[in-house]
Amino acid sequence: MKPVEDCVIGIVGLGLMGGAIAMALRKSGAAPAGRLMACDTSAETLALALESGVIDRGFESPEKMIPCCDLVFLCLNPSTLIRFWNQWMPAFKPGTLITDIAGIKGPIVEALEHNLRGDLDFIPGHPMAGSEKGGFANAAACGFTGKNYILTPLARNRPENLEFIRNLIYRMGFGRITETSPASHDRKIAFTSQLCHVIAAALIDCEPDTEITRFGGGSFEDLTRIAMLNAPMWTELFIGNKQELLKRIGQFEGSLEALKTLIASEAAGELESRLAAVRDRRMKMNG
Amino acid sequence: MKPVEDCVIGIVGLGLMGGAIAMALRKSGAAPAGRLMACDTSAETLALALESGVIDRGFESPEKMIPCCDLVFLCLNPSTLIRFWNQWMPAFKPGTLITDIAGIKGPIVEALEHNLRGDLDFIPGHPMAGSEKGGFANAAACGFTGKNYILTPLARNRPENLEFIRNLIYRMGFGRITETSPASHDRKIAFTSQLCHVIAAALIDCEPDTEITRFGGGSFEDLTRIAMLNAPMWTELFIGNKQELLKRIGQFEGSLEALKTLIASEAAGELESRLAAVRDRRMKMNG
Image (tube, rainbow over all chains, first blue to last red; front, side):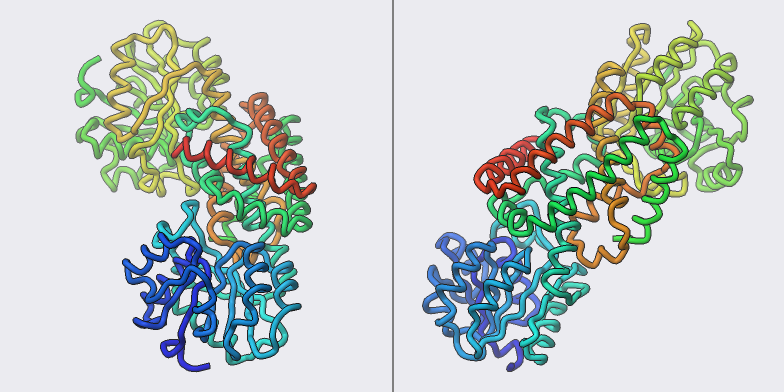
C-alpha cells in the first residue's frame, strides 16, 4: 500500500460516522486536497460536504467513484451495506483496501467474506463513537479523540494493510484499538452498547410525562440521552445481534431482580454491600 | 426574617452537599465573612473547610452552634437526620428557619413534622445535584448552576420564609424550583433518580469483566457513572422509598420485556416505531 497521503479515499455514506471520518481524515492531513471523495444518495449532503471543504468530489451513485479508490470506508447501516457489497463488489479496483463501521460484526463479516474478490482486502472495523444527533450536519460533534476502535481482522488480511489501518485509526484521533473475533465483538458490544440503548429506550418508554425532567438531577438525563436514537439503525443492530443481546438482557434482568428482592425485603446490610461492590467494580473500570 | 446577609447560617453535615451549599452561600455573597458556620463529626473536614475559607467557624458537636443560627441547612442522610432532629430540636433558637436536603421526603417530613416546635419553621427541600465523588473534598465539583430544586412546603410554613428560601436557592445558582407534595416528590424521584441508580448498579452487577470498557463508546460509561454511588446513603434512599421504587422498577421491567419480545420475534417494523416514539418523547424532554 502506498502512503495514505497518496491514496484516493472514498467514503460510501456521508451520515454521522461517514461524515466524521471524512472530517478526521481531512483534518489530520491523511487526506490532502484532491484525494477525498464520497458518495451519498442525498445531493444536499454532498453539496454541504463539498462547500465546507470536507470532501473534494461527491457522487450520487458509487459507479464512477469506486473504481478510482485505493481505500474505501463503507459507512452504511448493516442491511444497506450488504446490498451495496453484493451490487458493487465487481467495481472495485484490484488491490483496494476496504473497511466498514457496522456496529455488529458476525453477520456482516459472514455476508461480505463469502462474496469477496481475491484481489481485494477487507478489514472489518467498528469505531466506538457516535452521537444522539445523527446525519452529516452533526458529524463535527462526533469526537474521536481518545475513543476506542475495534477491528475484527480476517485471517486473509495482509499484515501491511492491517498496520496501515491501525496507523490511520490513531491518526484520526482514536485512543485504543482492540482486535478480536467478530463473535467476541458481538458478545461485548451487546453489553456495552446495545443493552445500554435498550435500557435507555425502556426508561423513556415507561414514563409518558415529559415534564418529569423538572425532577431530574443529571442521572436521568445521562441514562436516557442515547434514547434519542436512530430508530432504523438500532432496529437492525438489535435484531442483527439478537441472540447475544437477549442473553445480555436476561443477565441484566437477573441483577435487577436481585436488587429488587433486597429492596423489597429491606435487607439493608446485604443491599449496602452489593452496592459497595458495584461501586468498587465501576471505579476499576474508570471510563 | 432579616436579610440573609445578616443571618447566622449553620450547616449540619459538611459532606458533598453540605459542602457545596456552604460554598455556594459564600460565593454568592449570601453568607458574608463571619456568618457561616458548620458542624461535622470529622475534625479533618472542619479544618479543611476553615482553611479554605468556606466556613467561619466549625463545631464537632451541634451543641454550641445550633442556638446561634437564624437559618440551618440539615445536610444528613435520612436516618442520621431523624436522629439529629429528635436529639437537637430543643436547642434551636425561636424563629429559626430550617431546611433539609434529603432525597426522600415522605418519611422525613412525617418524622420531622410530628416533632416540630411551634416556634420553628421547617421547609423541606431537595437540591437535584450531586456527584459520584462524595465528601467535602469533592464539593466544589458539585455544580448547582441551572439545576432543579424541589421544595415540599408544609401548610404551616410562613409565606415570607418560603419566599426567603426561594430567593436563596436561585442565588445559589439553581435554575428551577418545583413545589409539590412529599408524596408526589417521592413518586417522581423514584423514577428520575432512584430507578436510574438501581439500573446503573444492576448493569455493573451483571458484568464481572472490568476490561469490558475496551468495548465502550460512551453509552456504557454514561449509564454507569452513577454506579459509583455512596452505598450507605443509597441503601437508605432505596429502602426509604421502597413502595414507589418497586412500582417504578416494575414499570421499567414491563417496558424492557416488551422491547425484548419485539427483538426476539424480529418484529422490525413494530420495534422501529416504538424506538422512534421513544426518540420523539426524549427529544421533547430535552434535558
